Length: 145
Image (cartoon, one colour):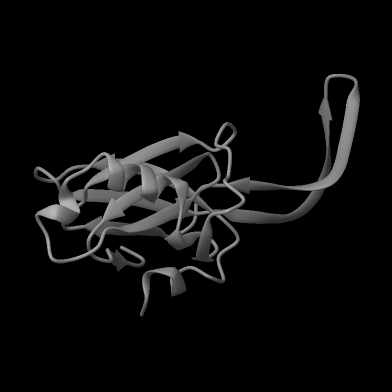
């Protein structure tokens, strides 16, 4: 199964941890969001919104493992500005065919010069974080660990 085909039926995900098991390996642990069946109205200051459903991070846990990477960035999802010219496939787990991030990494990294493979740009779109990874190969996704 391709990276982007994983978790396509999941509402959303949360980032739980970012680890480097050994140098230049990356292990991301994510958790599926669980959406409440109960609708409620929520007060924020003097405003009430709703009906809304609560979302929590109590779903199944999954891991995404990159055996080698050039770089990764973790963004607060509230402040990342998406580039309209970026081209990608996927929804929560995405792969970019062209992106400003990848162009930046290619111009500031020697990884493609020392490898026969081209850098690839992967993204993980979580509730509170967006993670971008530039790597030579697709990661291994382990579901329901």
